[in-house]
Image (cartoon, rainbow, N blue to C red):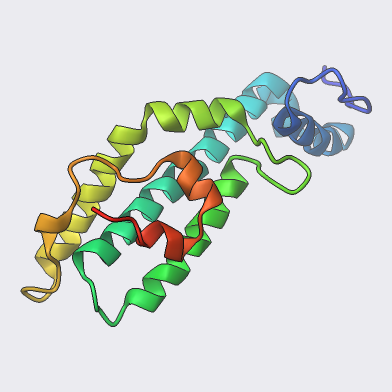
Length: 168
């Protein structure tokens, strides 16, 4: 039997406290799926979902920055810059970074840094696929850097214009 979390101060991370508060509303309402599934499983599923949000936002950020590098002077540049800002916000949200919690979820950050090269390869694959489908000479894929020229901290602290202005 689950119980209501009125005091979440013993939970270590802000993310866990936030999720426990949300779940306590469900538990107190005797939500059957939550009771059957168990609090630990529900929290684990929420963590996977939030990490997935951060990881997908990271890949999309990389792709859109690569679009700017490989297709300069393209009419879509302003659109891509806007998308970069949108994905930066999704990344910050997935990492639970806010004005109140500037550090965010350290475990998610560490995992993203461990998976940085893998995610960059996924982003490059997406750009190459788009380049194959585009009109000839739209993308200069030879301009794709072999290694990611940005870090997670760059994504969190620099805006779209600063990120796209990286010199190669």
